[in-house]
Length: 146
Image (tube, rainbow, N blue to C red):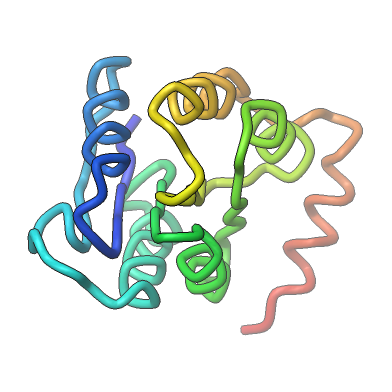
């Protein structure tokens, strides 16, 4: 899979996530501080990663900021994106399984490398949403404004 990964600052977590994704066989397209090597506004990072996903330049995205909240809010402004801020593996798996989330948001403050590894493994363990949630996911998509 082609994964867009963006961070608003030069967090060690962002480097770890990028390396872990490559290690498990994904192609990573970097954004924000992963390219610029300096602080980048979090709205820009969340938006650019989300646009890459929505427009088909990436299959999924990962966004990182201090709390994870700002980049998830910015990503969710893009039509077709369902960003989920995940702090553990169960939440990540559920976001994919029940919400068909396509952008993972992480907190650089709260997420250790071990927890990030568990979150990434759980996120990518789900290939398709639960069939019982398809109606809810379609309802969510219908709520998006043009």
